[in-house]
Image (cartoon, rainbow, N blue to C red; front, side, top):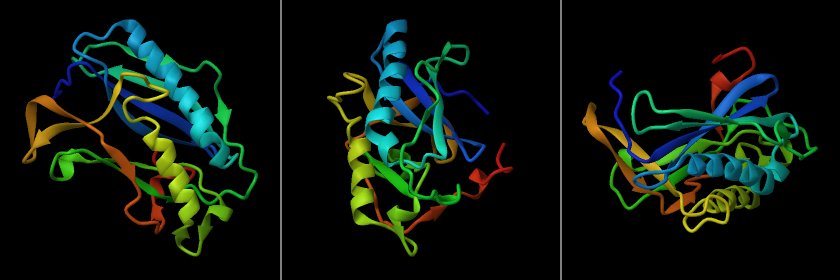
Length: 205
């Protein structure tokens, strides 16, 4: 696959262990035209703090954040950083956890049009008390959306780093340079649970 540079952009992979299965969610941040090494270091520490403060308390204790892995997307040989200080950090909800594949899609919106202008994460670590039938409770969905919106600029966690959607293709062809669009809000389009089967133990490794 052709590498498409995104100048000044950091890809942050939040790597979890959920019932012994490795899973992750990815977020992108624009750090400026010439970010320093310290900007990447600050981002890694900030995302660990965000997880511990905003998500840990409403996540199954069967899930732990084990690493935040950050990649500089400015070039194909640009550096990477691994952050594990204070980790692993497990969820603190004692309610029975649901199977790994049961999840909720959180959509990230920008001012751009089309699918390439949107992003999403699939939640890790839902519990039985957060789902009724096949629907995540409104209160829990609101809590998750509120947690993600704490990353919007100006963020109490990531500071001036701009949470973004990164588009590397147009009409199924690679761009010369990625288009980076600031995220304006996170939302839950509907509260019906989704399924990520490759998150089940023994799959997707």
